[in-house]
Length: 161
Image (cartoon, one colour):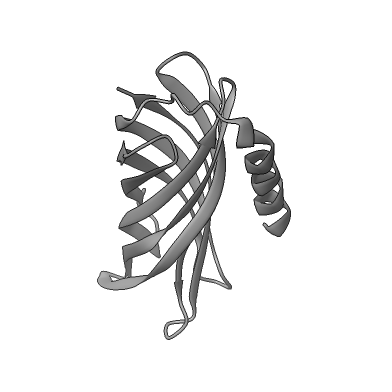
């Protein structure tokens, strides 16, 4: 994971000649997410909806809502809110996420909520003036009290208005 973060940060450094005319405004999208849990907690494939607002060419905020299918144990749903920094040019975007996640798990008919700090890094590649193809890695949720550690790898797209 540290090599992917280093690669994304390197891309951000290369993008310092970023297009400062990048549009601000709303964006929506979706991701296919591979969630890996520590130890015997489980692994899931989740679908995630993304919505955000880019305040200026470099910063914005974002909300994500996702969940996995039906398994036991199951990651029923999660919601994340992020502060997003971005560096972009005409071809690619590099971004960092820092925020908070709340997740609900179920096992054997019982459910329990967990919450914690979340962070990540990603790279997006411009498809056209509105669509971006994104690849990212995140520490989706870490709760030391519950010995819960979820890492997420995702691919998705977003459309910027």
